[in-house]
Amino acid sequence: MLKATLVSLFLVLLMALSFAQAPQQINYQAIVRTSIGQPVVSGAHVTLRFTIHDISGTGNPVFTETQTDTTNRFGLVSVKIGSVNNLSVVNWSNGAKYLQVELDPTGGNNFNDMGTSQLLSVPYALFAANSEPGPQGVTGPQGTTGATGPTGPDGAAGLTGSNGINGSAGATGATGLGGVTGNTGATGATGIAGTNGATGIGVTGATGPAEGFTVNIGDLYGGGIAVYVWDSIGTEHGLIASLTDISDSSVWSNVQPLIGVTAESFSNGKANTYAIIAQPGATVSAALLCRAYNGAGYTDWYLPAVWELAECYQAMAIVNHNLGDINGFQPVTYWSSTEDTDTPGNFAWYYQFNYGWAFNDVKYVTYSVRAVRRF
Image (cartoon, rainbow, N blue to C red; front, side, top):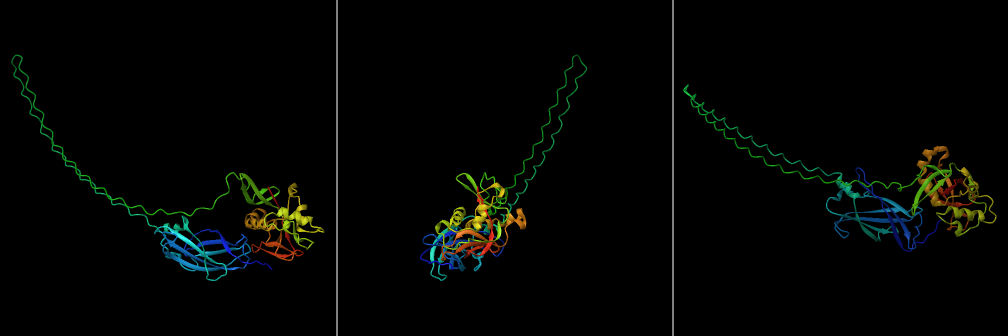
């Protein structure tokens, strides 16, 4: 059985906000840890109280609710803010909003204040999605066309001179005056422009893969299939799983006594693997099967640590789509290379791919084996 003593607690907050149609809710996740930074024991009952303040972190509370949840193996709790009380009571358009989180690690009502932080762009999508566009301004009337002035009369014809010697030419008649131009009608007043509707704030999309990555999850690469990729100071790295299970029935080790810290890492499966193989009397183990595997000519395969198996589980949908249900990860239990320190020495960690969680069992029980390597 797992054992842990709760001394004093703090939270590492991992908050993911998402919104949909009614009912409106906010996803909230947090890892509850002890005062030395270790996740609390699985199955601990904790109580969370959420309060949304108006305008400032100490402003008038406009929403509050209390929820109780149970931690998983990694100390993780996951709740939906708004699943108890209705978030629609919050007027998101009326200034800034601040979320205060309080915790009772014993599941009661003796709350510790874990801090208050401003809700930024994402929550206001609740308001912006319902905003109405501003009304269109009224078009001003067209001005009246001015009247056309009258046409001036023709000038009188000049008299014709008599047939005398060099008779004088008749004088030219004067040109009639032009009619007076009518006044231009006044321009109609311009209508008042309508006010702009509120601008909606879209939900920020998930961060895409790091710029410059050449390998993505699900790619066939390095003798297997990529299940996790990351960047370390400008260098691309990744975790590769074998293209098939190495075994569907293997003991963790034929040697039961405790190995110790060299085989207890939750993230360094390669170091754990070497420690298992080096234990005196070890002749049969899941670690030996992985070290003997040489898929695509690579000789650095090893039995994954429990956190590395968790990454394999997260990539399961993509891996099985690309490899097929036969060669992909199976809905079974896989041995990890992580030895359990909370037992007398004959237990190790496994990961259940049909449920998505880790636990421990005695080393002589048989489970499936999948090899991994890194690049």
